[in-house]
Image (cartoon, rainbow, N blue to C red; front, top):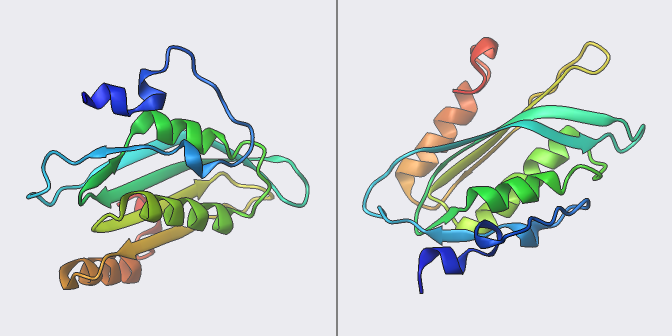
Amino acid sequence: MEREEELFALGSQSTEYKYEYDPVLLETFENAHKENDYWVTLNADEFTSLCPITHQPDFATLIINYIPDIKMVESKSLKLYLFSFINNGEFHEDVVNKIGKDLVTLMNPKYLEVIGLFHPRGNISIHPRFFYSNSEEKYKELEKYRFMNANLNPKRVHQ
């Protein structure tokens, strides 16, 4: 079977958008370079969810960094999945943790982090981060290092 036939969202002639959170939208494809460690960075610059109290929209840039193992997330399915948060009322920290856990369940990567750069509300911006590493020592060390150094230079939160 060809790769395109395996990916429903990518091969679809018409795109259906879900307006409620739906992790089933996420799809994977096989990592063609399993023997290599390399970074994949995905930026979602127009992420939107809702405040669970006021129901006003919250806007953010989401940055997803990961080192794939066997599976990788297909980007159109990720776009549709992230769009499914548009009517979802959750705090920023919950959104970032939910996305991180869903991606870990989906791909079982060697390493993954999700960074939420939420726009200011009431003069306060919130930047939660989710970190994950598999059981290999070098990825645990990477997770520890990234976690411990995440806020040393707040102007460079995406690195």
